[in-house]
Image (cartoon, one colour):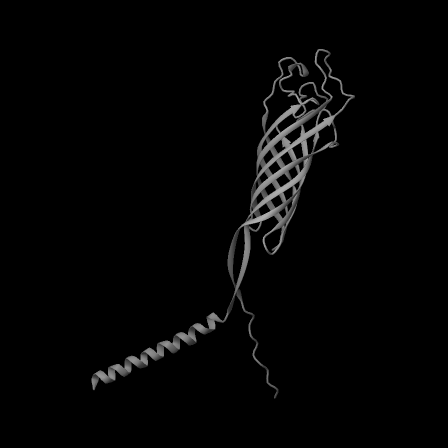
Length: 252
């Protein structure tokens, strides 16, 4: 008889805890909605663009040449993103009115420079939407350049085109900064455009250094258009509180 009473007590306690759990947890679960969103956190870009030079043979960005670009974008964060960039292109300019200030120096009035550059860039998204971003960017990288004359001969090896004893290396640092926009469609594919100023730490993109007419280093202005391909997608879950339910008002 005692065992039967203990069994009934155990059953009633089990029923009590089950009802308490259901009535206690149900209101908590009903206070939130789960929002699921997908974001593409890694994009591969293939692009083309143009670049112009400003230096001793040109005081403005007059002559434009093409380049090809490839970039790996890391877009996981909302405000700050980054990318690895590879560029291959050329620069050119001409100024047939230019004359070297020293008679012993052979004057170079036109050049064509082939360059390759690898850069790391940091982006600040001042406009960040689900599909659209507008940003400011600042970066650093390496720039390899090879100035050539109109016959395709390397000017770095032609020492008579510079002041006596003047030599330079063909790899330098470069610091780009600029603005851009990127639009990513719902399937992860996207379009990207950017305007960027490159500041290399050399004055020899045109093979003219100490005998130049313009103080400071040479500069580059570039723009590009690119197609972005999705590489990695992540799913994020977010709890959204439900709005409070107002009690019904009964007419008296």
